Length: 582
Ligand SMILES: [Zn+2]
Image (cartoon, rainbow, N blue to C red; front, side, top):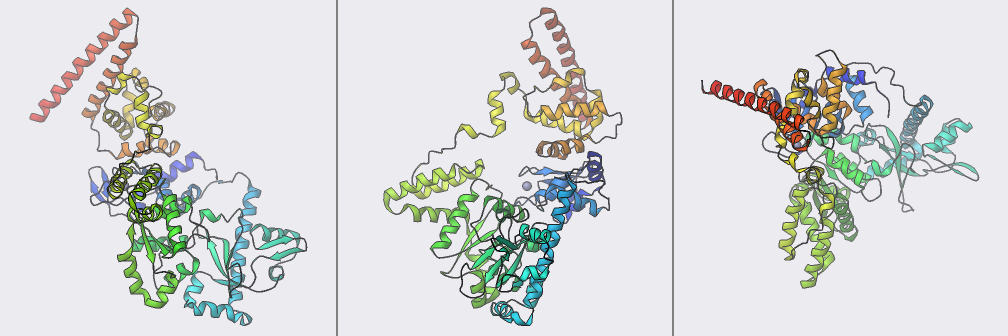
């Protein structure tokens, strides 16, 4: 990962406009100190997504997603961190200072590789239009791909023979080695040979839209029908999707995402103006690809051939999806008629009919799963038992508690068997583990109180300055809030300026912590409320300390402190209720 200095990152966040970044996707309305809207990460009818303009952080009280501008670009738009930084810097015209990569030579080599891939794409593309390669262009014409589609997706052709690439480039050792590294040359005992020969070429792009590899399809009936780039440092087939970078924007616009089996399906759909399909690269879909898909759209439609192979592929997708599925997602499955794919169907029945299939025939994941279970388990009483057994095993992989329970109920209805729920204590959510472990006295503290206390501090970091000395120990060191809390203390201590945005800095240091974004997006904690919270926290702390202390003198002193605090608390409460009734 490229190294960015923390001052640069802080300034970048401070100068970016998170609300503007988010309002490209979400309608935001003012509500109290924050902006609210419908969450772009999950389906909802009433807004629980909040953006704090003051702290430049968003948080969804429905699904718990939250963070700063970097996080939004990563989670919503699928950028890796360095690209999210570059994107923001470019947007506000901030030069990236000495973003010197760990190893400049490495970076130069990588840049050279990408430039070479780009060059090769151009060469394949020009080759497609050469007079002697008419049959390749004819192939695309037969498949009804227009010149516009051919141009947009930079389709190409690799001619027959073994010396084509060598003729296009200088034949020096370094060039040949580089061409081998990007996967277009193969080295054998006779030297270097072209990997792609007599094939139409589909350039494959990464998330940033850079060509990183190629898919090649044979023109006649030869084998293998499809040949792809080998794994290189640029091309990782299990982390890429064909059509992803080309269609990211239109997926958002149409609120549609269709997952198909091959390049030609993606292109066929695009040539009928359905430019929202992606496909894995010739292998069964991977978990990483499923994550990319679900991040891009929460209700993708997975399209499969209705034959046996298609049903198997659908089943594999369901299995892979179980560990990452959440109740916020609603993937659907569509079986096309036996032996058909989107390409052949579109040619037969046209765009409208195909769109209707997507709209009307796609079935929820659970329904498709239950159908699959029935097929595997077979009929009769034993069949139902086998179904329950298999479902139980599969359900144990679902990490979303609510979804698992909902699905369990449905499967019990169908199988008429009570599932045993193999999901047991070993993977309880962390918060519950924590409660189970901590000493009893901490259970008396309402976690909501912690939340509002932290919200009060981060919303107005000046409050750190007026905390009593004891406050540093309010959270025991196994408490989940402890590391953030103590770090905030040292940030305040290190910095004389009251301008320091502690929340932003914590967010940068704890990028995976969702609490920080939630705290700043909670309703404003007013001064009086904060005073009460602080007293409450202090009293709880002293009470606990008292229980664990031995010395009599210490105990007497603590009792005194407690008494004073309780009196002050009572007075403040009375004052507040008097004020309210005025
Ligand atoms: Zn949400």
